[in-house]
Length: 260
Image (cartoon, rainbow, N blue to C red; front, side, top):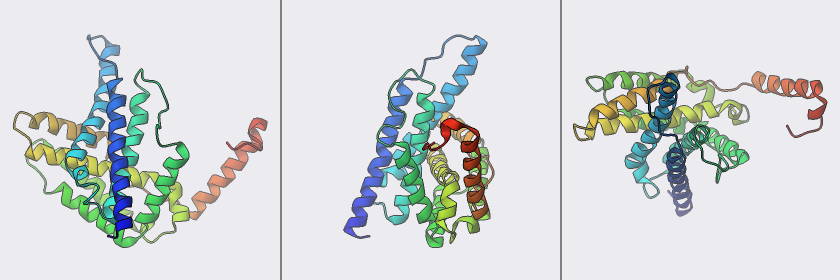
């Protein structure tokens, strides 16, 4: 890796760590749940899910994230970028349920967020890089554990195999089309890394912490990795999007000539 590539990788690692710091701040604004009324129980489930997102991000920093910036190469940079995207999405989601104020994309405007996805999908269109991302994720996932953690591993394993199922839609494809649906691929790559981090910590943590980490991994994979394999956009999809945008603008005078 060249010095310039190293600096770029370092910036990507710094961006991912900054995103986790934003998530820490957002989680601090979540309400404290007390009582046993139905509405309290319902809120507690949502708060718990958001805190598990934070737990996954913390686990990632302690494992894969700890290698940045010095240990990140081109493929690692792409993987860090996917984590950065996912964690910033979790910042948005967490702030929507807290009393905190301010922009939900501090430091990353919407346009920049989509530019990041486009860069990542363009990189993943390289078949060799796509395969290396999958191989590294497989290595991080490791063998199936025993006990209750196996359920989380099974979900993560199925999600990872799904990247192989739809590989030909992404690897070697035209990024001008795939970028239209690229966030689903970026999300899957990022969520898999975070799930692997939770499972890794569950294997190596003190015995008293293992049950909670296993439960967190089970819930995280259930929440984020049960969806079908990420499918790429096609030329027809892109064309239909343009047709729908034109139709909606025609139907509303306020939208005509706007940037909406």
